[in-house]
Length: 120
Image 1: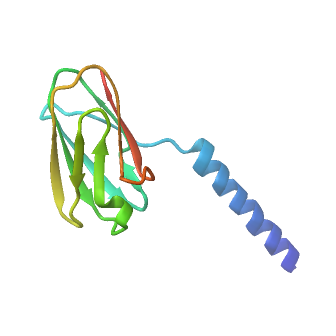
Image 2: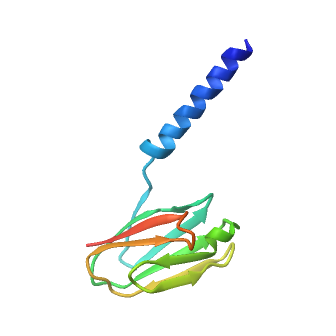
């Protein structure tokens, strides 16, 4: 009986690993007309982690950091010179300038939390 339980637990763990690394896709957000995109930082992820936005428009990232991990303390946007400290349990607005088409990675200071802002 115990070997059946161990095998079942092992199979469940393998299924979770497959889902996490190969089947999971981030929730996608689209920039609203108001230009405000809400991002939640919790449980080691940005949600949404994939954001579409039109080119040539400024964008406001309204970030709510619920994760107390030191890794979640900063949000960095590559190519834009953005490096913002995020307070815990408070919304923090990050103003992004009008951007050229392309992909802009955003991440924490340790590159463990990651997302992409697609401008097009």
